[in-house]
Image (cartoon, rainbow, N blue to C red; front, top):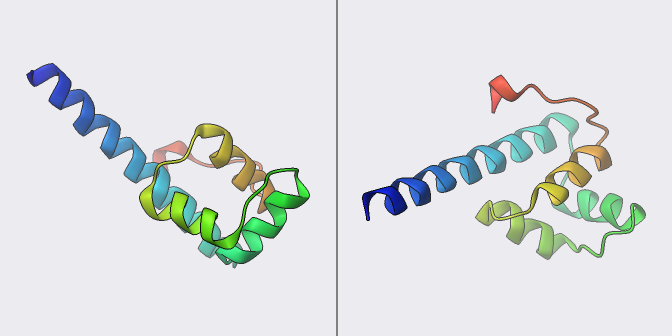
Length: 83
């Protein structure tokens, strides 16, 4: 049981890191959730302001969403030691 709880705790920690990283990059780029959703739609993803806000707010998004968001806001690289 301890192993399962530790895994859940670690997974939550990584989800929080991903959430904070995406929020920080959006802020640095001066993007709103609405602008990000528009850019993601231009890249072929069906996103709305509300769907983006929900994913980022919960921190529960797949790596593919994270990568698409970074590309959409013009971030070609991120520093993982900052995450």
